[in-house]
Length: 176
Image (cartoon, rainbow, N blue to C red):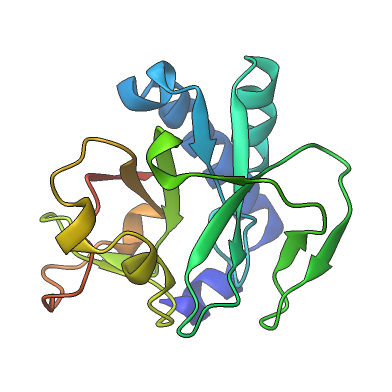
């Protein structure tokens, strides 16, 4: 899946990003949300920059993940502003230099990049377990917020993914 994602042409990625943005802006949870966590596309992930611009234009607060210094690391989310200073984390993914972290339960929606997904909310990320540790089932399972929405290309759907007790399912998946 990752190699197929990386092999997409720039025009294929742009078309997918435009389609995704349109769908996301019609999603009920995203329409209602005021505080939305996104990600910066990496390794061929579906690009959210078109959606991000639209969300900011609507006056919504947008947040980016930052790897914590905890062991094992989890994600924390800081407010995003266009043009803000960034630096690469240990995986080469840009993160904001200036950080004001938002409490997780104050986020309305978290858009999570997926490598694969199934129809039952099963998801496969990049293998680091960051989202699983950040939103553990045992502590977040009974809360309505944030809504965890997976982001993927349509062709990343598989029949079924193995799910372990610590794996965090998504509420739903939005695709191009």
